[in-house]
Amino acid sequence: YRVDFIPLEKIPVWSPSGDSSCKPRYKFNEELNEKISLFSGDITKLEIDAITNAGEKRSIGKFIFSMDGAIHRGAGPLLRKECATLNGCEMGEAKITGAYGLPAKYVIHTVGPIIHDSVGDREEQALRNCYYNCLHTATKNHLRTVAFPCISTGVYGYPPDQAVEVALRTVREYLEQNHEKLDRVIFCVFLKSDKELYETMLPAYFPRG
Ligand code: ADP
Image (cartoon, rainbow, N blue to C red; front, side):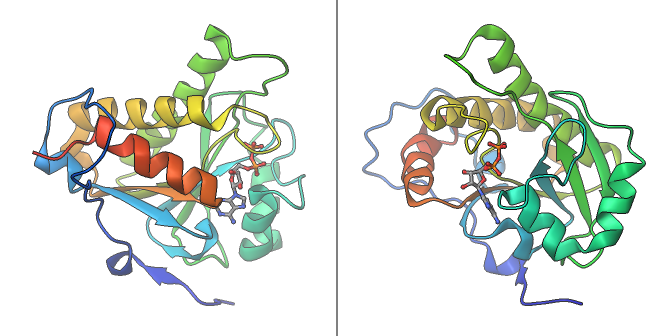
């Protein structure tokens, strides 16, 4: 069954505001900016090529109240069945499945780092790998529109203000190398605090001219 869905046309392209206090870290590039969206809401409602699911290492689909839970509720039992054939997913890895009852065409599963204490090099690299490998999996499968949630910043405890930098930097760098392979990368924020964080940080990575 298909519930309500949000088509790609309804997801606005990111347009940096002029009054940002954030210093640009990258050069203005209109072509790249046009491929970025900030979407506030439920990732499972997006009618795009692929949504990313931050799952759990051994049994993707275990957490019932997380985003992973929302994805499995929307997709139905066939997704869980396909996940069981994946042979798990290591931290930073990405694996693709069908999306079944969801409006998206595919789900790309990844496993983010768990932060116990503070973020070290290993955790930062792992989070970077999540974003990179999801993008790589998408382009390898000729998928052109991808949405990311705020990976690891929920129960996995990655500080959102540090995670946003990794997310935006990795996507910016990937697009610089592969912009012809992707039409849109959507950052999907669920919490008001994450929306504010992305609105503040986006102009540093995708500045206006
Ligand atoms: P992790 O285990 O990677 O920390 P969580 O599922 O706990 O993953 O949450 C990751 C982020 O996704 C959190 O910021 C959470 O608010 C957000 N989130 C939860 N449900 C959804 C949803 N349906 N769509 C988009 N983001 C969501």
